[in-house]
Amino acid sequence: IKIKTLLAQDPESYREQEVTVMGWVRTFRNNQFIALNDGSTNTNLQVVAELGKFDESLLKRITTSASLKVTGAIVPSLGKGQTMELKAASIEILGDSDAEVYPLQPKKHSLEFLREKAHLRFRTNTFASVFRIRHALAFAVHKFFNDKGFVYLHTPIITASDAEGAGEMFRVTTLPFEDTPKNEDGSINFKEDFFGRSTNLTVSGQLEGELGATAFGEIYTFGPTFRAENSNTARHLAEFWMIEPEMAFYDLEDNANLAEEFIKYIIRYVLENNREDLDFLASRLAEEEKQLPQDKRSEMGLIEKLEFVINNEFQRLTYTEAIDILANSNHNKKKKFQYPITGWGMDLQSEHERYLVEKHFKKPVILTDYPAGIKSFYMRLNEDGKTVAAMDILAPGIGEIVGGSQREERLDVLLEKMKAMHIPMEEMWWYVDTRRFGTVPHAGFGLGFERMIQFVTGMSNIRDVIAFPRTPKSAEF
Ligand code: 4AD
Ligand code: MG
Image: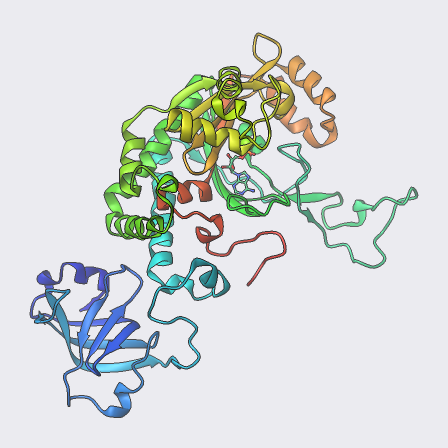
């Protein structure tokens, strides 16, 4: 039978069975012991090539990262580190790997180094664990919404509108660099372009999601989104994945309840199903933290932190309350914020968000009811006439992981807002139609998938939780 090295975690069940395993060599010791890995787990399978049984010419080719097909019996192991091992009857080299030029050594490499070898980094334990957890989280996302009866709606990647109105879009065009067709006034003539108009990569599937929610009731999207923000930080990507549920008949509180339940659900899912990988990353993180001065270390280990989050209620407070806390904090009085708190109406910087979650509440925070002026056009205006029914969820160590709101369902209020914020009607008429034909209260949010993975895996740089990161001045592959 063919087995995965994952099954070798319970090798007892294969005792004395004849098996075939295929994978890559991690290490080869004493011309005899091969640590074989097929990517299903970080626990290597020990393969024993009995001395004298195999040709020296074959043994020479068993180098780190060579691929092998091994057949033999699973037998009790006398060595330390495993109870059972595979006693090789035959070893076939599927692909050689020249140890002189193979870039990864069987030792610990820095994440920076591995980012430069991104095409091979899945072959390290750290990245293997991160991407197995990423997979599990994606599966848990679909399971959560499917079990609740939400419809998975595929919103377009190429769009003609700017959902966030922030102008951070990548333009899609087939127009030639030279001789770009121009209008009489010198502007680009997009009528000559593929779609006959100007188009962009989507920054969010929300607006199309609202079309779905006002027909199916509850939908979610889960796909790539693109932002041409020129921010070179450990939390920003130019291409990232977002999960955006959108629900009819939900107000802001229903929205916050769903978001909290959802986040706890997917964390619980990996705690229950990916324990080996989480434990590995937890100990990796603990090692890393030992290098830090005492006061910079986290109070909780990774697993402890995740368990704390799923077992405690998120802190909910309004923007106005948050400004109050921040303004009166010693941190502000001692001028420790790079951006001092100037008063109600200012946008919060990530240092303020992190102060709230990490220093003040020490748990995830749901911040609601922001000033209308610093939020998007589609958010519902509150009774006070100056705040909107917005919510951001802030996570310790990460900052904002969710942005959402109750949407403006009143046609007249929406139209007024769009006019004031210069949202072009010719791009948005279809959106406004939802408010014309059976409008309903509705709400939704967007979870940044990579930021969520950072939170769950403890990886400090967002480039290390997406397989092929795209950031300013960098797009390999
Ligand atoms: O807060 P944002 O911009 O909200 C929206 O796009 C709404 N349309 C969502 C909705 O209500 N349906 O983005 C949502 C989340 C952020 O909280 C953050 O986690 C993530 O997307 N995000 C990014 N992640 C990585 N790199 C970037 N450049 C990101 N920009 C936003
Ligand atoms: Mg946001």
